[in-house]
Amino acid sequence: MGTLTIRIGDELEHDLEQIAKGQHRTKSDLVREMLRKSVAVERFRALRHRALPLAEAAGYLSDEDIFRDIS
Image (tube, rainbow, N blue to C red; front, side, top):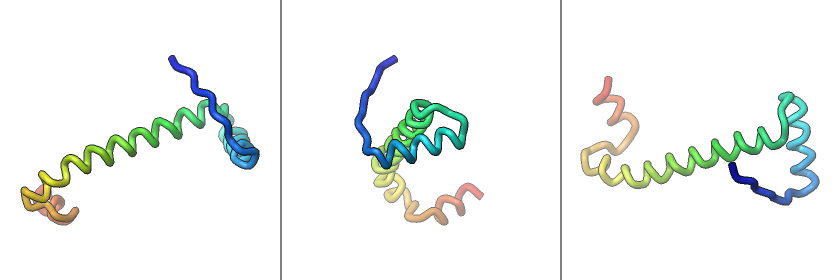
């Protein structure tokens, strides 16, 4: 397991402490979860960017096109 040390401003630290207290969790646990979510979103965006030209070439230009074919 790796370790990451970051510096954050007082206001952000205060906000993070308040959230952690409200959820009965540690600040580290919250930050790990936030980073996991952020990484997942970035991976999804990268995959979408790679898949979009293929979908468009197949005629999928909108969500409605996809829903029409899978419904």
